Image (cartoon, rainbow, N blue to C red; front, side, top):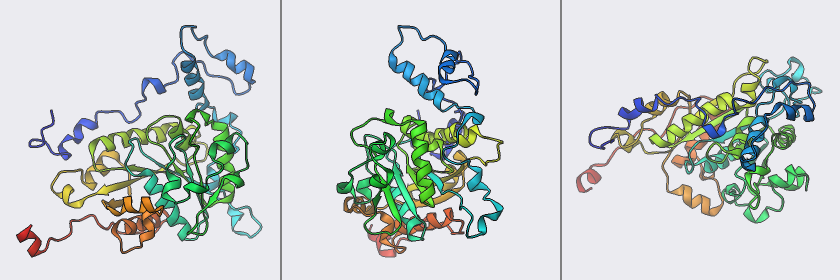
Length: 375
C-alpha cells in the first residue's frame, strides 16, 4: 500500500495518530467482571472477590489474571517497602544537614516496545557515564532468560549469582553484585540465564530495588523488549523512563505504546495526586543517520518528536564501532568525546543530570569535492 515513490515516512505519520496510546491488548487487561477488593481484607477474603474461573480455562489464564491484579494494588494498601516517590521528587527541607538521611537513589528504566533498538547498549553506556561523573550506579538486567548486559560490560565470566537468586533469597544482594573492572562506582546485577520471567514478583522486585536505592545514587534498569512480565516489572517502580527508538515507523509505534504503559501502569500513575509527580519520560534516538533523514529515507528528529510527544534527551548516530565495543566487552561511551557515538552518549548523560547540551551529529557531514566528483 505504501509505495516508496509516492509516500515518505513523514507523510505516513497521520496513520499512526489514529492508534490510541493508552489502548491495552486484550491479553493484558484485567477482566471486566473482577470486583474491587477492600484494602482491609485479608488474603483469604480477597481471593473470594474473584469470580469462579471455569474449569475449561487453562491454568496459564488463571495465572495471568492473578499476575495482572498484582499491579492493580490500591495505593493506600501499599506497604511502601520502596519509599514513596515523593522522597526523591521533594527531598525533606532538613536534608542538607550532615546528620539527615539522604533521599533514596533514583530508579531509571531504559525501555522500548521494539527489540534490537539499542536498549542494552544504551543502558551500559548510560550507567557507565553516570559512574564516571562520580555517581554510585548499579545497572540491573531485567531480561530474564536472555541476558546480554554482562557481555556489554565484559563481566560474563564473573556471574555466580543473579537477580532471581536474590529474589528467592538464595543469596544476599551483596553476593550477586558485580563490580565493574574499569569504572569505579559501577556495579551490575545480572539476570538469570536459566529461569523464566514468571520468577519475577512485584513484592520481590520492590524489595531488591529498595535495597539497591539505599546503596546507590542511580539504579538503571535494562528492560527487555515488549510489554510482558519483565518489561512491566522494570517500568513499574521507575522514577525516570528513557524510551529508546530507531528512526523508523514500526519502532516509533511500539515506543508510543510503551509510553502509554509507563504513563498508566507505573506505581507513580497509581499514586497520582498523592504528592508524587508522574514518571519523567524522555526520548533517546539511536542509529540516526542524518543523510538518510535529509533524503527522507528515514524519520527525522522533528517527525519523532511530533509523533511521540517527548523531549529528546539524546541522538546517537549510526556507528560500526558499537558492535566492535560489544565484542570487546566495553561500552561505546568509553571511546571518548571525540568519537561521535561516544560523545553523543556523554551529552545524553549530561542532559539527564540537568546540564544544557546542544544536539550534535544531527546534520549530514559536508561531502568533499573529490568524493562528490569521483563518488
